[in-house]
Amino acid sequence: MTEDEPRFDGRAALVTGAARGLGRAYAELLAARGARVILNDIDHDAVHATAVELGVMAIAADISSEAGARSVIEQAGPIDVLVANAGVSWHRDFAEMTTSEFDDALRHNLTSTFHVVRAAWSLMTAAHYGRIVTTASGGIFGIAGRAHYVAAKGAVFAMTKTLAIEGEPHGIHLNCVLPWGSTRLAREGSTAPPAGEAAAAVAWLCHEQCAITGEAFTVGGGKIARVVLERSSAVPADPTRIAAQRAAFSRLMTG
Image 1 (cartoon, rainbow, N blue to C red):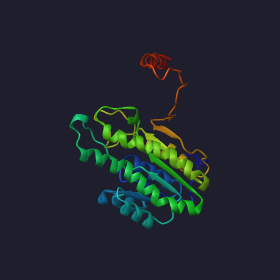
Image 2 (cartoon, rainbow, N blue to C red):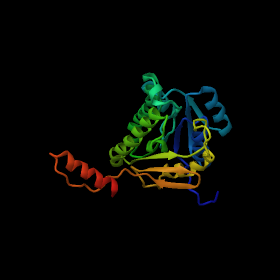
Image 3 (cartoon, one colour):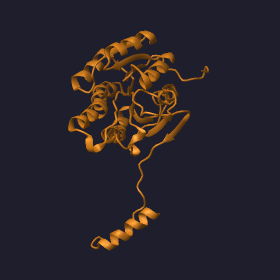
């Protein structure tokens, strides 16, 4: 690491889902570059063990509840950076999925992000500064067996876009990452690179010099790509005739 690498001296960063994998990698790099890092994870033993190894603070709590997220922010103290990384994933064919499983995926991926961002929001607004990175997934492009997970991550993507608009007047920048890294949540047979290869990109989005906001990026494996939601040029069609609509759809799909 060269001497011109951006540093985070004087900044406090909270990383959720930080006991292992991607969250741990983010926390380790931020701490190495001078940030006061606070780890959060639902796994009490694992997050405290990681905190001891990294020499940082740990708060074990379930941020999928409003009270849990508020407690983490209160214990962490003023924070400048929030990396909302906590989430869960598992395979379940749609036909076999239960309502409880679907609700759990939303709660631990989407609702947890909402709660922890909202808990930090007023503090960042008061400070007129904040850097927030949320976590979606490349699965939002579609992946069999993960409809529950992808629904939640797609909502995180959309929510981040909206919150970036609301946060900008208050000096709060929000971006979303779709990380590619080897973790225990990866699908069987995954060829994902080491989790640490996504950390530098996330760290840059957390830095005070980074002016990017309202964007989404795939990160990891030595590559970065911007993820955009686009709308094609409109094709005129008689709104009273199905056949006209059929022809319009055909033109759209064939370019």
